[in-house]
Image (cartoon, rainbow, N blue to C red; front, side, top):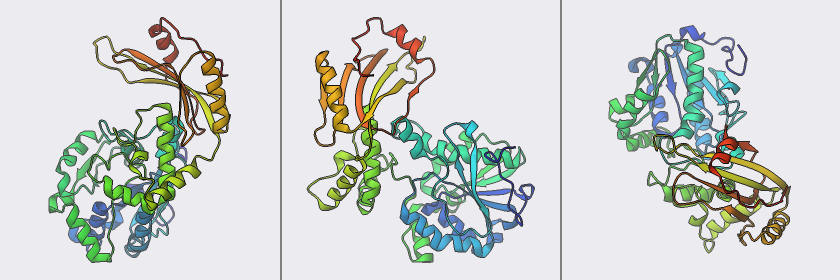
Length: 406
């Protein structure tokens, strides 16, 4: 079996055959409160530490204060009790890329912030941001899938229980987890719900125990603070870390260059939430401008919005091709000159430098197609969905004039 998919336990640790309990730890207040409380008397909570592993999946974009608290308070606690702590991460976009075991130890000395491939890497490579619509696919991709691959390799269908830190305010997540889990032999448990511990109780317990407020754990570019009513607190967190705000602004700006609808918070973009007249917001915007000081690219972007035979909308297909590489003003001048020659309208952002030309604007009804050239930071790869060209030719009966930009 390749090391990318599985690494044996380190010398001196329990073998995988001895395990029957897995505790998922997401680093946030809920699962941390559970773990800290259980370690006061594991046996009283039905935990045999010799047969238990704490599992953490590194997303790559955890906030610095969360990592600091974990290393200051929780890792010493795990070492004191000899808790086996396994840290995992993805190797790449595909399941076939496998996973990496970043650490497997009963004396963990550090929290690994990222692995070989992160959710950020994935989003940046294709020029998009996480989506609010539907299930939390980003979390399933970065954490759920990785954990399940490890569990399948380790348990091979043997019965085990998996403890998740959903708090009592999230009763519905219990049933969602029972539906979503596909690992054979797994039985999910939700002790915080059974205890009646909501978010506030978890925070209060950790403050009493450690004398520190434990913030929410989520990626710096998470799209859900808006829907959770936590956007003001999220923006304050951004203002405390302007360098992180600058990175996230660049990610969103790139995505919106390729697709104007790719705002981080659905109808709102992160960029429009910062007020340049406010000093702390100006610091974030200045960090954003520094982030844009990098090579840019000129992209040819096409999208197809198709319907199935039964009339239902199919997933959007996209083709992204890097046409040229250079500085923003050079690429803008090239796109503008050629577009004007062919009487194609051009949009230009004078503040941050993006230039965009629409060859085929999006229509109002499906099926439809759109096509544009745009400049953006050069982190997006060439990518075309399977079957795109044949579907494009089938839908586009009246091709528009092409811009000779290659």
